[in-house]
Image (tube, rainbow, N blue to C red; front, side, top):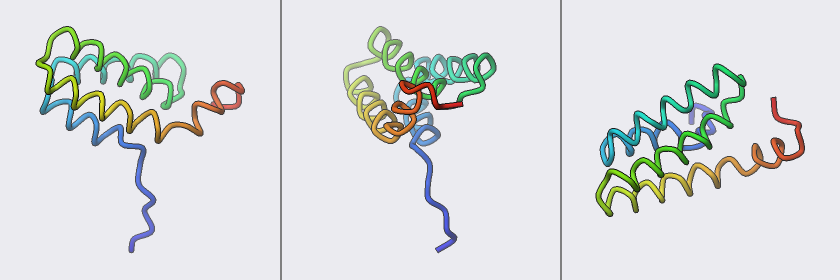
Length: 93
């Protein structure tokens, strides 16, 4: 209707993570900020951020939260497939 294509689930995933495992969400967001500032490549920060959030949740949150974050991580990784291919081919900037 407005022509928006939608994102890759990172912002929505952050919201879900904040609800399920706030500490993991903060760790993931901090990872994104750090890597984006260092590399200026949002996809690297996004992928690393969901990975860090998942690890932190596995160490600190209950099982249901971890399962929820596994779903978030899968969504983000699937939506970033093209970015991952470009990163592996050194074409992502």
